[in-house]
Image: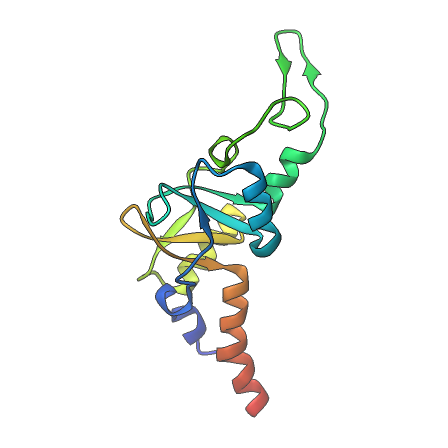
Length: 155
């Protein structure tokens, strides 16, 4: 698609409308089980609520599981957020916030620019402070295949 129509698509046409979610008080085991299936999860205020509190990715859990040592400096001891050093009980204790977001009316080009600039694979699609959906690297690739590769294959 050299005419730019792929980049002109609206986020609403590409976004996933049922992103994976869980609550801030979810246990680390609940988070780990969900990440086995989805790779990331949005932390929302309540079960049916859509107010985004944060996001947890496989990388965030990996960082938590890595047993990095404490580092002692002249002025203090640095204790990284690791299970080897502390007890992490809830999702809210290691979720990443604020979340990177866009709006449903943004173009795919704008959303991709945000993803590249912030170096993230998933961004929240927000309506006010409510999670409307998500744009993921996977959904962008899927849309590219549908809109561009199918046309090239047919030619």
